[in-house]
Image (cartoon, rainbow, N blue to C red; front, side, top):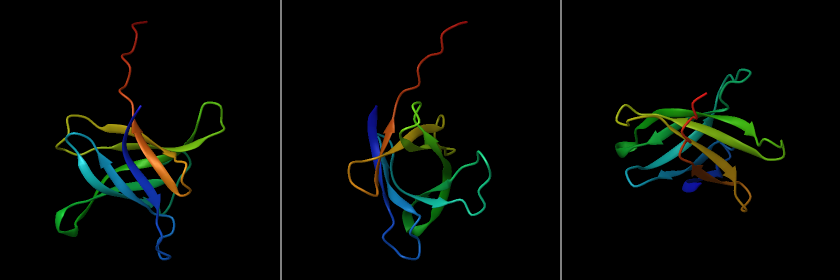
Length: 116
């Protein structure tokens, strides 16, 4: 896995559930904000993901779902990000870091599926 960003919980009392941070790769460097979904549904995303672009504009680029590791012991966020300028969506995950209230955003190249 490669670390491509970080998130931290908001310190603003008006938006305590929001997460702020950035996603960085060789071709991408964007500040992001995760805002809780206003009316969540079962199996739906927990957060909407927004990019903070030049001029203060905010653009929705994806969503994040709450997940648990296969052994059920570790919670994380599964993010799906997309933009018309990208060749394909970016799937990544945010795991709690060693610092309380912070997350490491990681990416892993998808494996080729084996023929059945």
